[in-house]
Image (tube, rainbow, N blue to C red; front, side, top):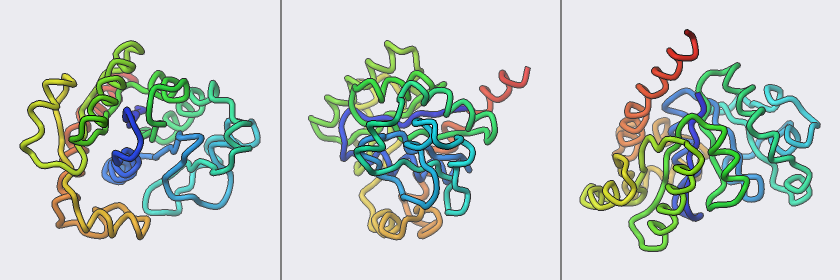
Length: 227
């Protein structure tokens, strides 16, 4: 199954959520933000190469780090050469081989974000408890609705539990909060999931809860696919 992680605007922690959720689900994380990649860069072919026809999708998956990752290039030339319409086929290839795939989508409402959402069976929407972030989240929620991609859950980043009810009401989905966390910041600097750096932290606990909440969705899809 392919699960898209999206956001209405940048800077809300979307890539952090995708990376840590991928770790908890033992999934391949695909950095599909073609112009502003934010996940760890690794040597070898990347998504730019795959979408330009220079590399095979499975060849570009790096299993050597703490999270299996299909990284994205950082160059403007690479982004320009990438054929975004080939993304759906790439995600399908990776999903068929590995099972669960978590896609770090571009933020916003551009065509590249739409392609990633359309290729996914469900999505998570990441936001923060600020007016600009929530306004963008409402727009992304509408884009997912138009494309027919179910919203599995909202992740409210750098927030406490008190903020969940109005966000759940506004976006029409259950909410998991991820608190401001020194442990999470330390894990990001180390290029590691927080569950590996500080497994007893509140942030690690919330990512485990998030994985548990989407796990049944993955199981249901896998059951249907095997029939």
